[in-house]
Image (cartoon, rainbow, N blue to C red):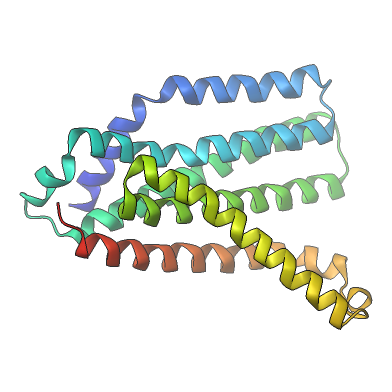
Length: 222
């Protein structure tokens, strides 16, 4: 059943292929006109990762306009399966955007004979962009389930800003209370653990977001 729901979203996703092609073309042009500078390759990769990764959210608009949830619930499907399919599709789409974006930047970096450190930094930046996209997805989905596509996206825009603002305040307070903490933090050590940190953050984001969305959808009248 979940496979069928994912295929449904995939067919809907095909209607947005022109947007995907546009993003990819813009990404390539940004890199090309920047004379293949490594900084612009990274920028182009981030643009592609975020733009392509967030396209999975567009399937909610189709579902809302077609009122497809009523039809789906008339079939031998549970609300839990519907939510699971949405999250699986979002994760697959985000992973696909990461792989495509990284492959493009990696091939160009090899062509430019970039240093290994630049390639490693690009991997870390791709992972951070992937995690940032996951944060947006995991914020969007519960909000859309709660308030619908239009109102949900407004709420989902505000929440990450508030979260970043609160985090900035916490870090600022920590540096004031513990000024020596800056000298104890070793950036090189943190960079080595970025893949593990991103993996943990992504797992937490999707798990927490999924259970919030499921709780909202189970109580929602359709």
